[in-house]
Length: 386
Image (cartoon, rainbow, N blue to C red; front, side, top):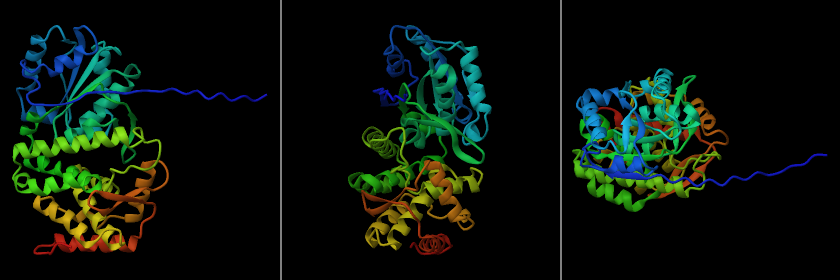
């Protein structure tokens, strides 16, 4: 006799996302209070630091040591900080992943211990995958050090590494124990990386928040020159928009195929792969969202004013909407790879207005080619924007 029993498990995840400055100043209690929220200390703590950040901010390991000594009731360093390759190199192979696994083993971390990851989104992704799989889950505290880390990757529930030529092919969904966004860490970023993070803000605002989009337009003169307070506001609002989507979108672990905030990402992922990571993720997103915005207009979903509003904001923020790699992009293959990445049916978000979107399930590649042609003309010397 066949019998079927349905097992239901209800899970409730909650983690703080803290916005602060100078998190490693002993006078700032945020990190210590975050660790002590798990119970009386001191807790065993191991730390992974983005090598690029350490090179730009050589005093960081010393500040970390001073902080832990000042808050000895909260934590004890179980091992010296581990410096790992930053940028896409962190995810290009298993070197960082295996190094963090070894750190958790040699530091004798357990499920009640903490791993603090300080770095850009790629380092957070690799360290997060290691933390999620060591002991089936070591408590992870993320401290993103890039704009994209603070307004997107660092506040979500995804992590992973690249494999078989595909971004994030291996990974897990695992909420962090906490996220500490220290805006002061962004001061060490090159101008190129601080600007690239604005693409994520444009994307989120265009898709789901007309008021945020209007505020970006208002802030554009200050954002264009990378005014620190304006950047902090844009990054915070972008992060909050991502948190709202994760909490209220109905599919935080992406069991379905739709990923509404992946606007422009089918092209962005392909461009990153085509350039071997030379094109930053934010830069690739800017090109991808511009392409899908123009396409939205060509297929009659968005009016001319909407298309121009998005492209004008990109121009005002000095985000390039064209890259030569787009010329050689095999669009059908890139879209198919993205469908596989989604894990099911193709879902592409397109604009119907500022703050409004619709999901489509197929692509008119002739129209998409026309959108590419328009962006190419815009990117040519003296070219006019589409």
